[in-house]
Image 1: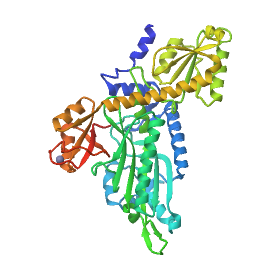
Image 2 (image 1 turned 120 degrees about the horizontal axis):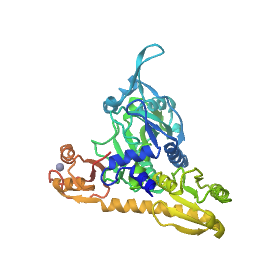
Image 3 (image 1 turned 90 degrees about the vertical axis):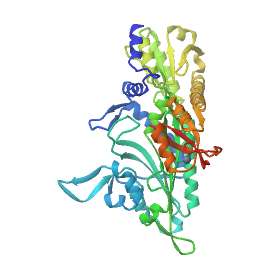
Image 4 (image 1 turned 30 degrees about the horizontal axis):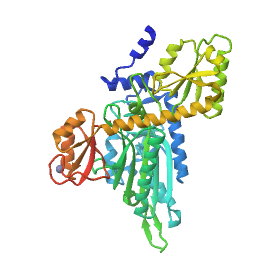
Length: 476
Ligand code: ZN
C-alpha cells in the first residue's frame, strides 16, 4: 500500500494547485516534455497518439463535408504579411522571421507561418479564374509558430500542430454559411469525440481574428472554471480576396472578388481534454481518442495460462477495433492500476486464474471505482457497451458542471464574485469597447462568445441598455 500511495502523491492536488496538477500530469503520463528552446514542447508517443486519433476523426468529417487536403510552404515572404493591414498588425509581435539562409543574408525576410491566410490567398488568386472554380475548399494539417515567452504544454507554446481550413466562395452569404457550418462541425466533434460540452458563438470585435469581418469561437469550461478557446472559424468578407487578388469571372462575364473564410483547431484540444475530464488521480481520456482504451492487467501472471488468456482477450478485442493492451511488465498489479489510472485509460480489465477458471473477467471503469464481474464469452460486446457508457458519462459530468457554473450577473461586483469563484458569467453588454476593457481590468475576464439567446436588459459595466448577452470568463 505504501508504494501505491506514494505514487499518487507525485501529482499535485487538483483542487488546491491546479496549475501544478496540470504540469505534473502532462509530464508524468509522458504526453510531452519541454524542448531545448524555451517555448517549445516535444509531443511524446502517448500524446501524439491522442493527436493522431483527433486528426483521424476530424479529417473524416472534413472529407465527408467535401473539403480536400493540401500542403503549403512553411516560409512566407514578409511582403505577403503586410498586404492585409489588420492581419500584419495582429501577428507582428508573434512572428519569427528568417533573415539568413544558405550562408548569406536573404533579399527578402521570410516569415515562419503563424497561420496561412496570406500564402493560401496568394495561391488561390492564381488558381481561381471563373465561377466554375468556386467554391474552392482546402485544408492543411501542419505546424505553426507564434512566439511565446512562457511555456504551457498544449496551451501556450511557440510551435504547435493544427489544421487550418481555407475556402473561397462566390458570395458572402455562402462563405458566412460555411463559417457557421464549420463551427457546428467543431461543436459536434467536441461533444461526441472529446465528450466535452462547449459554448459557441460570435466573438466581439476586440476578440476577433486579425483581418476577419467576424470570428466565431468554441469555448470549453476547464476544471478550475477558466475558459479554453478550443476552436475558431472566421468570415473574412473580401478583405483577403482584395489583398491577394482572388478574382473570378461571374456567369455574366463580370470580374468579381471572391469571399473567403478559414477555421482551425490545434493540439490545444489535448489540453482541453486534460483539464475538462482529469481528476485527483490523473488523466481521464475520452474513449474515442484514448490511445489505449482497455488495459488488461494479468493477476498472478507467472501462473500457467494467465498471460496466454490475457493475450487471447486482447486479440479478440483488437479484432473488434478496440485499442487493447496487456501490461505484462514485472510491476505489481497495484502499481499497474495506479499507472494506468494516471494515464487515463478508460477501462481496466483484471484477469487471474480464478476468473479464467470461472469464465469471467473483472472490469473497472476509470470514471468509477468499483470492480464488476462479467462473462468472458460476452467480452467484446461488454467492452463496447462500457466504453460507450463512459463516453456518455464523461460528457454528462462535464455538461452538468458547466451548467451549474454559469452565473447571470447584473453588476461588476457580481461579475467579479463569479469569476473569483470559478464561474462563467452571462451578462448584458452595451457594445462599447470601453466597458469590455473595464471588465478585463477589474476582473481579468474577457468576452468569450456572444450568446445567441439575447435576454439581458442592461450592460453589466455601465448600466446602459444592453446590446448583446455575453459570456465572460477568465481564459487560458
Ligand atoms: Zn456598457
